Amino acid sequence: MARIFEPQAPVDGRQSETAIFVARGARRLLRALGFSTVTEMPLPSGRRADLVGLAADGTILIVEIKSSIADFRADGKWPDYRLHCDRLYFAIPDSVPVEIMPEDAGLMLADAYGAAILREAEEHRLAAATRRQMLLRFAQTAADRLHGLCDPDMPRGV
Image 1 (cartoon, rainbow, N blue to C red):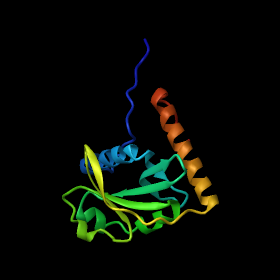
Image 2: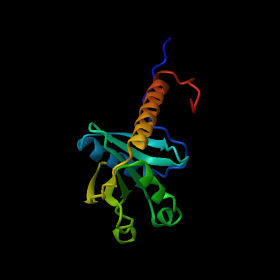
Image 3: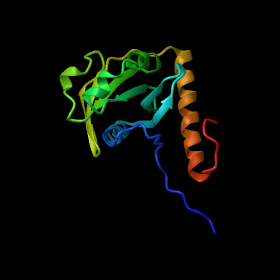
């Protein structure tokens, strides 16, 4: 008897329910703006981006999700993400004060149903070699996740 697999986003237990809802809302907004997205994407630096968006023209966004004040204060890695995208955003729920978010990054307010851009991110275009590296990483991550949907025994980290 054939088994049917339901698609699921990768969840490794580190994301709070709030972060998962904020990611969903941010992804819905980005999709409406013409971006395809991948969650929890490993970056060449060894870090992992919460959300990476790719537009048809090759523009790459990274969205760093902060689900609480404590989450924001505990994380100083986000400036490194600029090295891997054309624009950097934060996405927060309405329980996180807008005033504490860095002004040199874009800002989205999100919930489980959608998001709104409160502040556009400054553009800092990637170098061609970095863009190529990120495009390949995006494609491989997306393809591996699709493969995992139809082959639950696929080894992780391939």
